[in-house]
Length: 316
Picture (cartoon, rainbow, N blue to C red):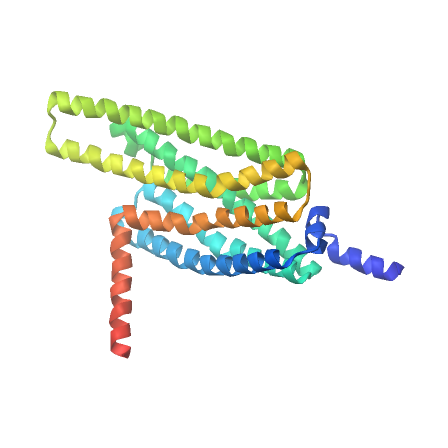
């Protein structure tokens, strides 16, 4: 009996009590069907995230007109979403399959890998999104000095700092589990949302002021066009933030419910599964937004689709 206990401990030392509870809690037929569905959905979305973000990465890195700090930040966000599709989401699908089949060892290992990579890429997404909003804020505040202050070198330095921060926060999660870490995550989440809201408010204030000046002074058509183009880039940022909120707010709500109720029921587990999946769906929504809003990326997609259709016709 002692040997069996020691063997079990050696298999589960990486698991928290909640994870072990989720493995061994009784599961009804409906929950199993729902879990199977989300395993399949996450696997398919992972493939889509990899393909879509590869297109974005290829387009920005190969298109001279997109070799600008603002697009390099989008490139950084696309690399993060690519990492979610390549690492976090497949690991999550395997983790849920292990939960479904009761394989404790696989469940524990994949749970640790998923949580670590998910935290890294989530933090990177948070910070990169704030950097994108900050970049647009600087563009309207600095005007002609923007290109002098916001250089490619400084942009890559910010991206490197963001990735280092993601790694350090993930390491901190491993060393300090529990309520303090959850509170810290929520504070960071709320702070970044407030920062983005502040920057966007300032940006729209400047846009309205410039629009009034353009109408009053009857500026040239080229200047009006530039303002419309800038407004379009801000609308793109709005869509990215909206997608971010749609994917992350439900999970934040689920964590709050878990902390407040302090119950590890099947309903809580299902809620976490659904909201965790929503978080990772963000990796597909972002490249769709880029494709709809950025013409160069849209042209690349059309070119790929045209070549694929031509190849299909030749095979027939």
